[in-house]
Length: 140
Length: 140
Length: 140
Length: 140
Image (tube, rainbow over all chains, first blue to last red; front, side):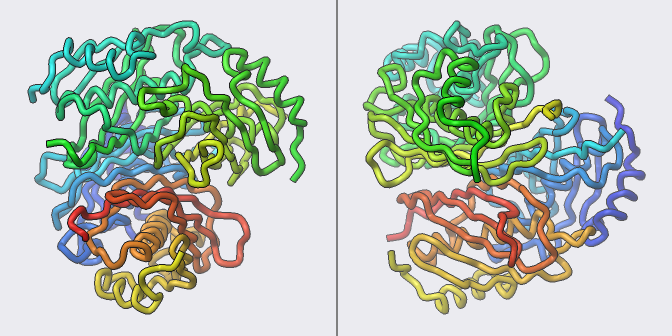
């Protein structure tokens, strides 16, 4: 399936709607069903024990699935997270992280899917998030 | 990865520990990482509108992930579900259902993974469940 | 807040839309924000070890939150569960169970809330479920 | 139930184990079952539209439930989140937030409970999180 935006268009859109955090994220793959996003992990994402914080992993999952939904419906800034269930499975390395998002169901009002989170260079996933986004009814 | 039990051994074990429901389920694939289970959908699993009930889908997810965990650790009947988060995405057909379970993390005390649920013959998933099982500490 | 239906009207409605299971459930309290439902636990709800099955507890949570939503919006049979996340915390007794549902947010398209599940006569909860229902857009 | 630590001891412990973020949080009530925590919302917690970001709300839920668990078992820094399911229900105001945590089940290896999140001064909850923490087996 072909995405309705290019990676460059999506990157510009994120810079506009999330100016505080867009620089932390880099889209490394995007089609109409899956998206891979790298989070550039910095000092403020870390916790003692040299590990990435839970809220930082949540942020990566949330951004990756937002992008996966926008890649299908176009730039609808008002699309909002209604639910996220995340399983933390392994301690992340203090390195960049990759979020691999997958759209499982795109309906008229809800987008449902998941994101597998990896420490870059590790084979086994660190966390697994399932997300639902509500799509604003007004879009045409 | 090789499972520690055969499909026949697992089927016999289920008949012993879940005598009320084991006949509803059939293991159609089992290795050490994934398990496919068919639920033979009967009148009592249906709801008006000719659809499969939510509790029946929950039962399939729960049994499929239980089997996936047993396939790795052996017959530990006291392994219990501690959390299940399930997204219902499409209306199921009034036909048999397939649950495809996948172990994402097998630790000493927790087994974490997911199950994708399909109406047999349909390509798109009907529901997606994420489960955590607690493994009894006493096992050797 | 006043519910838009009486307990008798709700009971009649459930008997019509869920003829297979309505007899298992009894509404013992219903206002516009909370609902208490008793599940009459029978042989088929039990598992070895004299405990109530996970799918039976899921069914109680699902029905209790369905009733809590109908109590606010009226009999919309097509309202469907989109997500349920359930934590199983204690082993239930082989007795009737009570589900105490609470509406946390009733929007135009989603109803979000939770259900605490008890074995009748026990103080501590057995399970805690969080549910989201999608409300059909066509209602006026 | 009496907590095993005072608010001052807990505050000092958080400053030691979470030096990057402890100053954002203030414990305003703590007993052995419930904990109320204020998050001092700053520029970096906000998003366009003058609202608090999802990851910031996740952080508040996570910290509040961590404190609620420590209040019962004492300062076990290695206690880690294994699951968090969060429903976002209303748009938060751009003000401080309060997280009200409640322990539902404290077992030997798992602590299970929830956190209701409020914008300070608003009556209706903004989000509802359910969390599970794994408690390290080595504690005596």
